[in-house]
Image (tube, rainbow, N blue to C red; front, top):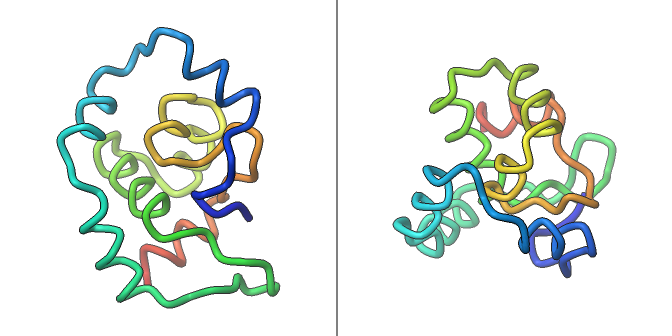
Length: 113
């Protein structure tokens, strides 16, 4: 499972060149200082491995998924489907278009943690 610091893929580069249709999420990303939130999340969320031994998803993108879930009124399976379908959700959360995305189980476990 990719860390947020993975280099962007070709798909990420080309999507960055497109005009963005979700102005709300772009504005939120600009207005919020995510560094402070990320620091707090890393302090509180110490999980480094998933249940099967793979590296855990980084906490800030997972937190951003929970924000999307709340703002758009999505269930865990609904969020999984939306993240796999909506480029704006992938961009906002910080995941890569070419990397793996969390399904509903890690989303639920992160929220419960």
